[in-house]
Each structure stands twice: as structure tokens, then as C-alpha cells.
Image 1: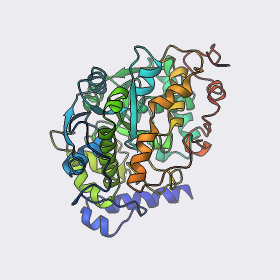
Image 2: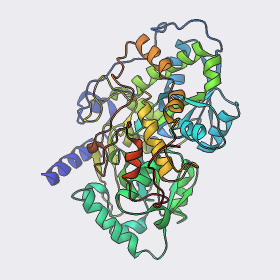
Image 3: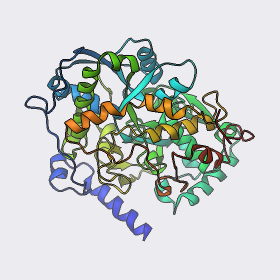
Image 4: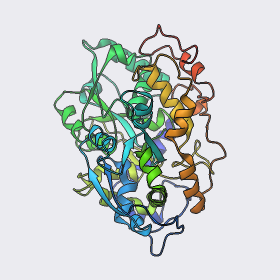
Length: 460
């Protein structure tokens, strides 16, 4: 049955390669569900939050597909609709855009999900907050030809995760030196899902893997030069490696944690306090853009827009695969390996087995912050050996959900019934459920972590 399913999905992939988007839209082979509709603004905003304290904003971003909502909000007039004049500032990597935000050089930015947790719980401290989620999923793990020659294949060609894990452990044991894997930054969700995946395979990333940070847009070149053996990154940099025959995608992060957090719209807490009306207008414009980005009929034009030199600066066909849900895992045997993954890029809502209304991608669940905090402690990315007793208070400050909830209500978007969400076992690759009310028990459940001798038996 599983083999038949894969053949069917690959048939769909081959049938749709090269087809014009208008044809794909009218005959939707991927059977995308109906979603909340949002079109380009042709009139005033559906909500007026009052007089803006500031109208000219500078928002930073790094060239990855996850930044599409901010680019579309500017290009399609959503910012203007709310009286905002926004300049988008491109940065080469996440460290650079984060640094400018922390030094008050910009008003807000597309940020890695881990930034607010790191700056509020780590050192040095900074009052970074997350206004909203921009997307879910969106990343993949790409390996070089060396792994292919070592008989490693894409996850879709294995019977199940245990089958893949067994093969990958055998491959790792044969290597003369630790595998070198590239990451964009330590506090990225791409990195945390990579660490989670490796440990689920029963590989200790602290001892058996060497992680190296590079700017996302440079990673393909590092792969080609043999500086890294693979990497875990957001798109379009996995599909670029596949198209250019530089690497193949071995796993997509959606299959590590279905619906995992992607990027956030971040600002400084005092900035939002000083500009409360502007903050709400900003969230409203971006939220409408997120809805626009999740309309199948818009995806082809979105790919063309965000590929421009002032944005991602890459070929359109590097972006299309993930956006159109026609994902190519690639390989080095001259075969395409297309799989239908309609929720690879999830910007607002798709009806999936892990996301049901009224839940949607943009809600800033505090429970996701709890999960990330457990992983930062697990891997010793912050100087804490135990789960902090003031964690709930700090996480409440990091996610000022009142701002988002007011905007969502104004836009007639239903809100989830709970702010802390239990993640069921079937959304994780290792079938390990996450209950945010039990973070200490969750931490103690991991056999592989940075310091196995430490115990997380209480709070400090």
C-alpha cells in the first residue's frame, strides 16, 4: 500500500512538472483545500486601529522563501492599506538582521523563531518580542553526493523512519571523521529540528556531527566545495541544490515535526509599547499578506516576485517547487523524485491532519516557546541546567498575544481556543508527544542531550 501511494504521488509530480500555473490552478492535481480568501487590497482597511504613532518603518529580512509575506505586503499594497510606508532592508544572514534589531537600527524584522527566547533567557539579554508567526514548515535537509555514494537516499524511498534511521546510523559509523553539516544559525528552528532528527536517529550531534554556520545563500557553494557534507536550511536553498545537481534532499523538516514554527515578525518590546497602534496596523497588514500567500492561485506570481534581485535574488524555478507543492527530492541517478507536499510552505491555513480550524499558522502559541526553551536547555545553548521557575512569566512577555488577538478579531479571523497547545505524538518523527504543562518531564525523557549527567528535576 505504501509503495502504491508513493508511485501515485510521483505520477502526480511528473504530470505537473512544467505545466503552466493557470492550468494547474484550474485543474488542481494537488487537491489543495479551500482556504480563507484574501485578495489584493482595492479599498480601505477592514479595520482602523486609530492614529498611527509612526508611519515610516524599516523592516529587515534575510533572503529565504519564509519572508514572502513581508515582500508581498509591500509589493501588493497591504502596508499602504494600513497607512504604513515600509522599506524592506535585506541582510546577508540572520546574525546581521538580529544585530540591527537589537541595536534599534530597524523597527522590526523577519526573525528566527529562537531569537526572543534566546535574548530573554540567555545572555546578553534584550527585550525582543514576537508579534506573530509568519509561517510553518519550510525547511529541508540536503546531503552531498558523498552520502548518495554511501547508499543514503531520500526518506521517501524507505519503508518508515526506523528503516531510514538504521541505514543512516550504518553510514555514519563507516565515516573516518565526523560529518560536517551546515546550519544558518544555532537558534534557528532549522537547527533545532535537525538536532531533534539526529537524536531521534540515535546520533549524538555533540559527538558525532560537526555543525558549521554559514549564510543561507552561500550554503550551496560550501556544499559544492566539500566544506560541508550537507545542510539544514529553509527554501529555496534545498531545491537549488537539487536543480543544480549539487545535492539531494534527504528529509523535509515538516516530516520531523508537522507544523513546526517557522519565522516570526519580531520587534523590541519597548517599541511596541511606544507604538501600539502602529504595531497593530503592522500585524494586520502582514496577516492579510499571509492569507494572500496561502492562495494556490497566487503562488506562481509570488515565486516570480520574491525571486527578484532586491529580494531573494535567485532563479524562479528554485522557488517554485516548494511553493507549488511539487517538491523534488532529487538524486544523482538522473531521476527526478517529485512528491506532492502542499503544506511545505504554510503561511496562514491549510486543512491538514495537524492544523484544523480555528487553529492557524500565525497564532503565537506560547507553548511553542516552552518547547524551544526545553531544547535550548537540552543542548546547553543557554546557561541554564534546569527549567526556570519564571519561565511562564517571561514567555508571556515574549508573546504579547493581546496585540495579535485584537487584530485577528478585527479581521474576523477565529482564534484558537487555547494559548498553550499540546502537540500529539503523531506530529513528531519519534512519536514523542509534547505537553507544555510538563516541561521538566519532557526534558528528562531525552536520553541524548548535551550533558547527559545533568538532571532537570526541578526549577531554579
